[in-house]
Image (tube, rainbow, N blue to C red):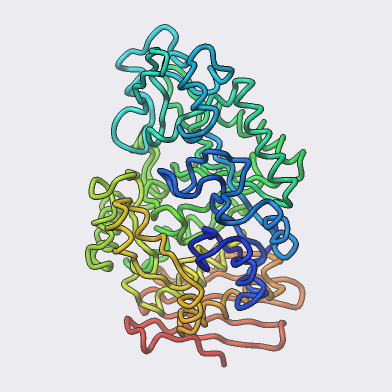
Length: 503
C-alpha cells in the first residue's frame, strides 16, 4: 500500500454511476489526490439488506456498476482495495437457496452454520449468555426449509445475512474463490469484514478468540500467496487491536475518531497522546467510514471493566456521545441505537463534520491530526466533501448508518469541491502525500496538557503539527520540501473565519 491518503467509497454513491464514472472522477477532478481507493461492496447485489455487505454472489460485479474488466481498468490508474465478507452471505444466494430447497440433501448442507453445528450436545443458558453480540437479541434465526426440515441458523447481524462455516470444505472453497477473483481483477488489498465473528466455539464469546486469531493467520497467509495485502476490520477493546496488528498487514485505528473528538470537546491532549505512544504503526487511520463513530474502541473491556479500563473515563465517554448529539442538533440521536434499525450498540451514527457542529476549522484540525499520526490515512467519500447528515435518506430507509451514506451525483460533487473547507482539505491531503518527512521518524513532542505536538523528521526534511486544543487553532511547520512553510489552521466556531493560511 502506498504511503499516501486513500479514498473509501461506495461506487454508486460517489458520482451516481458505475466504476467508469468513479474512474473519471479519480483521473479528472481528483487526479493525483489519492494513492488508492477502497471500493465498498460492489458485488451482486449492492442494495440488499446491508448495502452490499450481504452479497448474493461475491464473485460477480453488480451489473449496474460494470464488470470485472472495469475493476481491472481502474486498478491500472490507482491501487484498489476490496472487501471479503468473511462471516456470512445473503439468504438470497444460490447456495442458500439450494440449501433452503433441499436441506440435508443439498451439497451446501454444512456451508451454513446452524446452532447444532456449534452446540451438538445442546446449549445451556450460560453458553448463550457468553456469546458476544454487537446488537440486541440472540444471533439465531429459526427457519423451516422447503422440505419441512426445521433449522436454527446462526445469523450474527441480520436474518438476511447467514453465517457460513469457514472451516467446512465448502466454506474454505467459497472464500478461496473470492480471493482468486479479486486478485485476477488487479485488486492488491482486501479488507476482511466481520472476521472477528467468523469462528464459533461452545461456551466462549465467539468473538476474537484464540481460534479466531489462528483463522486470521491462515486466511492472511492464503491472501498473501495471491499477492494480496490484508486489512482486518474489528471494533473491539483497544488492546485487542494492538494484538491483531502484530499478525496482519494492516488494522484500522478505530480509536482515533472518538479520541480526536474527545480532544477537541474537552480541550485536552492526554488520552490522544497516550494512544499515540502505544498504537500500532501499521494502521489505517480514519475519522469516518461507512459505519458509525466507534465508542467501544476507547471504552473499557466489557469482560473486565475494572482491570482493563478504557482510554477515556466512562463519564467523559458518556459526555462525548451527548456532545455529538448536541452538535448535530439531535440528528445523530435519531440515527443511533434503538431509534434506528440495523443498529450497532457500540457506534454513534453521524457524519464527522456534523459531530463537530459543522465547524470548518475544527474539522481541518481533526484531519491534520489524522494525517500526522503514523499509518496510512483513509478518507471516506462523505468526509472528503465535509458532508452533512442525510436525514432524508435516513427517513426513507430507516437504517441508522444511512445518515452518513449520501448519494452524490456528478453535479453535486463539482459544487461541493468548490467549498473552501473542501479545498483546504485537499491541500492537507496533497501535503501528506508529497512531503518526504512522512516517510521518516515520528515523535510526540513534550507539551502542555492542552497542546498536541506531532512531528516527522527525515534527512533534510521535517514537518510538525502543533494544536492548541483550548483555542482550537493549529500550526503546521514544514522544512526541506520546497523551502520553509508555515500553515495556520484557524478554528473559531465560525465557518466564515475558518481557514488555512500559508505563510
